[in-house]
Length: 460
Image 1 (cartoon, rainbow, N blue to C red):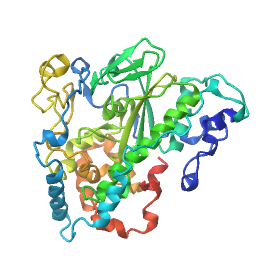
Image 2 (tube, rainbow, N blue to C red):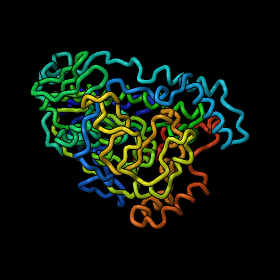
Image 3 (cartoon, one colour):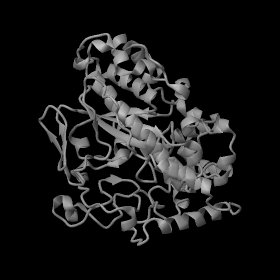
Image 4 (cartoon, rainbow, N blue to C red):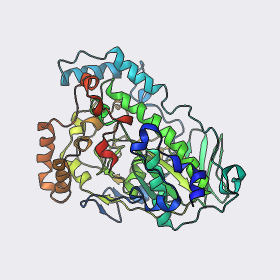
């Protein structure tokens, strides 16, 4: 097992500054026994058989994303995103009247991260599969890794955590979850086939039927920058997170390959929040397209799916009272510069004037941008800018201080929702949410942690 770990590269996973927070493993027994392999959650987080989001699976069909327009096109803005930026500038100035506006250093930070956003990071040398091991690793070929589904889940949780992942949950590929995969993405038809290995061509994305598990993993967004969204400096947290996501994605692919299993990156082929809700990462929120996590609040930027043939224990949805809190909160809606977040009650209506009958997936001429089939809130994509993220910075669950008071609040509202409106107003009284943009540059260095994530969240 120790030799197997050397092959996977985990024996030296902690490098430089990350060594202080990344576990270093010497063999697979240490991986499985690691505290990071199990997920000890707060007492108020209850596993349930069905998500708190009410779903009518008879109304859920695979979505055809061919020709889906971009947000700027949907908004009908001939200048693309430029007018969005002007509106954001005015929005921030209204909240912080003494703020002088975006500076060159704000732009430089933002553009530096955008230069590597979902960038060109590649694998220098692919990890050898077990049968490819040769003498230069001091051992010969080995059989693929074998463990129980529970052991395998603990193994990937520990390994992924060392890569920088915050949470790891698992869904089965079954009759329900297949409905969540898009039928088309661009020109590629997404299929499930009786083939041994994954195949991807210009017009086909074929998932083997023997790959029966979907790994849902998450990445944390910079906490201090998030609290300064939607300003230009705050929005640097958006590309920063996706830069980390690309690196993590490659590490996960190579780790599963090293174990002897397939790793199919399905991040663009199925929705993130849906799988996050189904697997217990968090609950549906008023923000609509994201979710709130009991541990990380609204700081999840990058929820990705990997389809694999590695047998894994399935994780259940949760009830932590977060969706109920959203019913009486609405802070995210009041802090959206463009009015894209629904302020009313949850609804079965998909709020876009479209239905499956006219969708191009069944021969229609429209690309539906909000689906029916669940009783919740839906984002108006015709108004949302996408990387504004003001809602995430304003959300009371985004408070990253992790103080005992805030943890008590979470526990109380999970079992006693009568206090929810009080806690909502308290979040404003104690100045949770947005912070003045320029103040980020004056933070003590110990408050700008490596990789941007509040250390209190790294031990969740």
